[in-house]
Image (cartoon, rainbow, N blue to C red; front, side, top):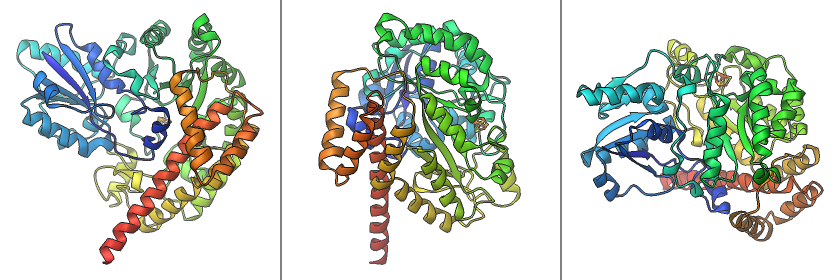
Length: 506
Ligand code: SF4
């Protein structure tokens, strides 16, 4: 059996980092970890081929080679997934689909032959044994969640690793919190499950053996749920792994998602820095206590969130803040509150989104009862869209949102944040390993931001500030390239919207 594992394209968006990727000659942020895990679950007599449409085209020859297509997609890839399914069906392939999109909305894809909901580790073996018996079912919805200690290492050999900015790895799944807007408890359960330390080290060794020397993104939703395990087992092993002579002079940097409660534990933060953790994405959501309480974001309540972010930065990790607008208690003043928080904490990159209600979340249930669901599916909030009817009014919310994003990523604002950040922040321990592609990236940054851009004066002021902490400088340049991406994205969106409005008026 020839299995074509296909990841649909991700639209140009402020999250796709398309403009920033051009600096380092990469095509996508990270490889499709779910499909690589599916590949590792297939029996040896199956032939697997990965086509990530973000780094290579899906050709007719690929379709002619395959017997079946295994498609995995996130909810934001709904439309392109539909087009892809139609193409595979036209080519006569059996279609197997899984991942968040199909787990959240299985009834919307009648054209899929076999739907694998939730985790591949539980559903792929069931499908394989049913196929062997000649009695495959249309839908596989497991009762429980997978035992991650039996999860295979992703089949890295199938991915064109050099096309990605980050590799990806997963240590654990499941989150015990029940934030009203979050679909993770539905997708992955509320009990923390994790791989063993030897499993994790073996995966890192496999990535290293495959030639990977760049940043590794730990995709876990909440890395620091079990501080005891981190401090006593995982982090000591990672610190030992980094001490290998080939890595000791320049540790491999890790990027993870963590909970703000990390700021309470100096020992844990220190060990994370020594293990190579360099960037953290932290869900701040909002600074409004009433909104945090209503959303059930319990770990963030009653805290000095700005002080917490500054403590983590001083420890030597770069914090990217996730924030939301559109909670029921929000008025237009939320935008100024968010802007103050971002400025006061020197958070260079903040991902601010409009609240959405994915299906199977408590928020969806509540808003449905209140008659405030505008569409069953979350919309592409790249353009400030949402599937809920916000109390602030959709038009007002969207208009404030776009103005807010444009201001946040105007060069004066982001270079100001970058300068404050390099002055106040600790220095990450893991560095960026010199390479030809890094050198090329550096030349591109200097050429485009330091010579050609109208904001070049601000760029060189930032470089002068960062030069006092030379180990921080490469990270500051990386952040500048990412802010430049956001600036181009929002400016481009403004142009497109104005042109559309002019076209409609004419
Ligand atoms: S938002 Fe974060 S803390 Fe809340 S349920 Fe989701 S993963 Fe857990």
